[in-house]
Image (cartoon, rainbow, N blue to C red; front, side, top):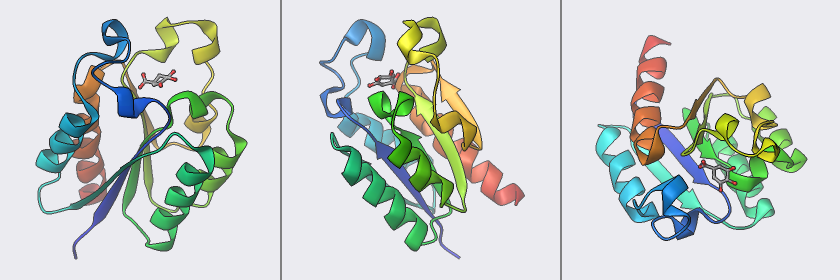
Length: 146
Ligand code: DHK
């Protein structure tokens, strides 16, 4: 049965490639999307980015309503203070991989406490843009393992 994996991105990630390249690298979001699709094999990828908290919440609802197999989510700045994003993720019944391009634990203290990690199946941080296809591959392996 074909599976769908939703890759959801929060605020400012549309600026990847130009945004603080010393932290986030020079890979663009479009290139990240292509990396995810290349890693997905026969699984379908829904790839989205928004600068608005409510839109991210609604996209998590959509993944839930569609009974998606998994969500790879980089909530970006919404990681650390968004109760609505956390509450939406609590309703999702599939695998959740929280992803950060940077190692948030080696950065300023404001980035150290993720609200999302408490509901995530797994967390990837610090692999740079390659973390995205790594997350998709890991998601597929976890789904295959059941
Ligand atoms: C991306 C952001 O936009 C920041 O707000 C997070 C995360 C880190 C990342 O590393 O992908 O703190």
